[in-house]
Amino acid sequence: MGNSMDPVHITHTADTTQVTLEASLGIADARTLYEQLGTVLASRLPVTVDGGRLERLDAAAMQLLANFCRAVRAHGRGLTWQSTSPALQQAAKLLGLESMLGIKS
Image 1: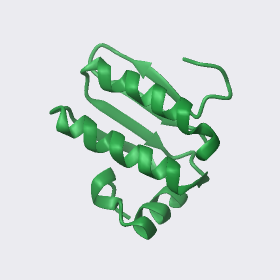
Image 2: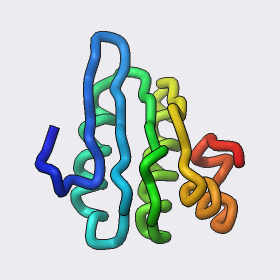
Image 3: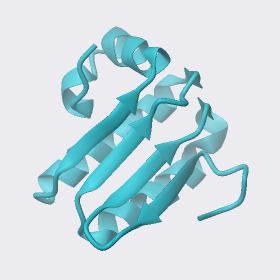
């Protein structure tokens, strides 16, 4: 796990990788978010994402999340959402990324 300012926290277990998104994801977090999600792609385990805390995110963060979800599935690994906040659901719907993220509003 990284420092408290990380936009995402990653926990590995024997059979899954848990990705917990913090309350705010923006362009300032893009590089760190990209790097951290890249480590998850390298793990080869199914992924569970918790987006329940997310209160604010911008288009750059949504694009990174959508591409991450697409890449996980393209590698033949499962991806499930533990929870999705109203802000995440609204942004996904507004940007037309619900299908790519694999979330339902």
